[in-house]
Length: 193
Image (cartoon, rainbow, N blue to C red; front, side, top):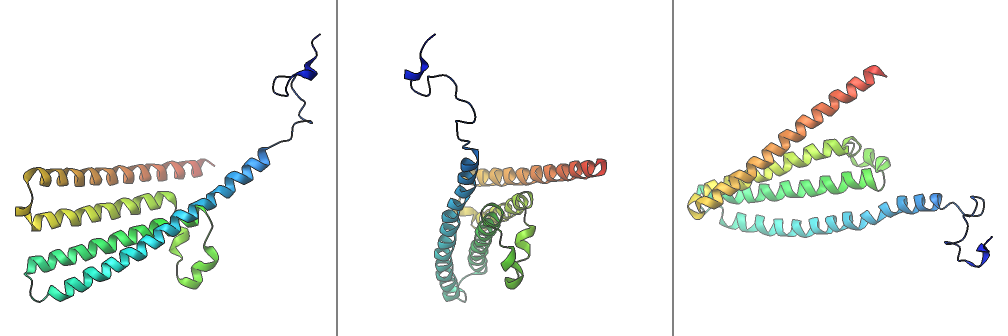
């Protein structure tokens, strides 16, 4: 018989489970702890939102300066830019807060004190629908802005904008159908259980 004692541990005979430490609990804790790295991204979104708010105030100032001297279509276009900014800010806030709540740390203890009960109600499926609706709303605003300044765009740009908006609408319809089917499946499963 060969002497396996001289071989490195990986090439030697298999060690018994009593000799090999179980790394699973350590790996599980490390993987669970890694979710806290997402905090950096959510804080980055909060900083970016603060910078975007500064830009919004600047846009608002410019809008107010020219409001009385601008045409109705230019005033409406400026208002649509502000509305677009507000929708984007709401989208970023919703993603950052609800993702942090579901992936990093629950915000339950602070919800009632700050009137944020909705945070716990936004599950990943619900968040997908809300995101899709916000994206379609933003796309609609961009399309309306194009239609208000139709002469400034080529036919190809208009067609592509409409096609992209159509894809967003198709995507939200597909998400709604999948969400509905998932609801039916859960109800059927609950009825059997």
